[in-house]
Length: 90
Image (cartoon, rainbow, N blue to C red; front, side):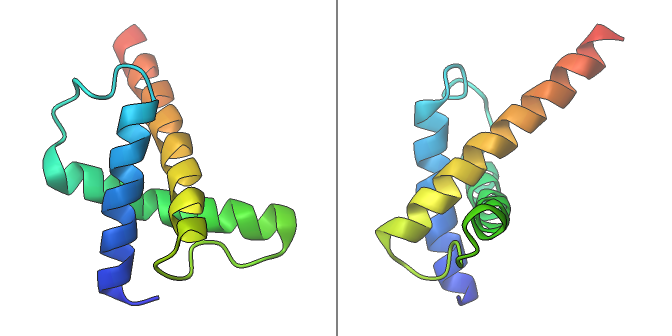
């Protein structure tokens, strides 16, 4: 998948993940943060997808890739919140 495709899928998946997870709409990450969240989510989601189903994950500009990146983005949001809560506790 080309870099431009990763960015497009990342923006879509990051935006959808921020809409789906409560409390993330108010976080001031901006366009670049949303894009980065989606691209990292696509990588994580593709890795999880390949590990569980032994199939390629996010590999093009299609609905399946956006779904895999969306799931990965939600995982990334969860991990970021976990670390954020730990740093606030100490």
